[in-house]
Amino acid sequence: MNKRLICSFVVLIYTLLLTGCLETSIVDEVSMVRAASFDLEEDGKLKLTVSFPTFPDKGQEQTLEQRIIEATGETTKGTKISLNKNAQKPILFGQVRVLLFSQALAEQGVEKYIDAMYRDPAVGNRISLGIVEGNDAGALLDKDLGIGDLSGVFLPELIEQNQDTSTLPPTNMHQFLFSLYNDGRDAYLPLIIQSDDKVSVAGTALFSGDKFHSKLNFEDSFFMKLLLDTTRQGIHEFAIEDQEQTSYVVIEKLNSDFKRKLDKSRDVPLFIFDVKIDGAIEDYDGQMNLDETKTLNKIQQSIENQISNRAQELLIQFRNEGIDPVGIGEKYRSTTRNWNAEQWRNELYPSAEFEVNVDLKIIQSGAVE
Image (tube, rainbow, N blue to C red; front, top):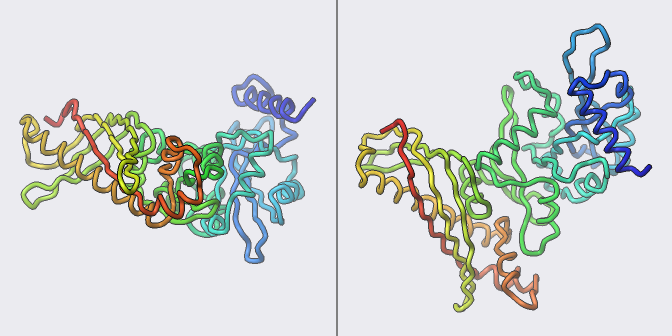
């Protein structure tokens, strides 16, 4: 029986256990990791921390608890082996849902760690990845989240819901490696921060190759997503300037689509983004009358300008910093014979120009009218 069949069997047994179809005694001989983190020790060694649920003994209250184990080593595989030296039961990664990397480690490069996990047949290739600000991602797994959820459940759901609600650009392990090995784009991951009393997604970590390069805040992550992915059922708040006063409007049911075009007729390549958005006004704290068409038109125009201007600024920023999370190079390559990655990076991309056109349609103004 090969490794994939064995792992599939373990996953099936674990699923049946969670649904109450099997007794815990069948799988109480293994520990199924739900979340793992990677950090660098001061001596340069890798520290791997894992979180897994522990099942209560018979007769005890049927409440899952969490156990944390960590080990250090020179390689991912070697460190995984060392984990079992500290474990009461064999540790398996067939149920891992999220891999976290400290920013300090990511600044040195993450390829060898992610690739080692990707090659493990027990690990799904669409699990969530994230960068934890600072140098101790392992502390996040042992943090008291105060919400009743284990870290292996809360953390992947935190990432997924922020991507699904159209705030963060989507990615997972498979997509990260695709971008990493693609000479026409750069990778990115969600950025997670921790404080004394909470854990939250703070924005997007941008990469140059496999190394952490810089970060985008929550607001700019939304604008970047509009340039590289469709959005469905999103929600976002915009500031509206009216007679030297600032009011705020929340657009919900925010759906968007985009098209990218390339104009090669100029001396330098011009990339044109056409973004179409529709949504409903959920909340508004200003004094303008939303029953009036001219008021809605003014709000639409203001939001269109904000998105267009900031999106174009981000594209220029990425170009000037030599990174390409939006995949501008991928678009150029798709329309070019004899693609030359070095020429693109050194000559064409630094001179590229951008145009972002936004068409917003407010389909209703809801209960705030």
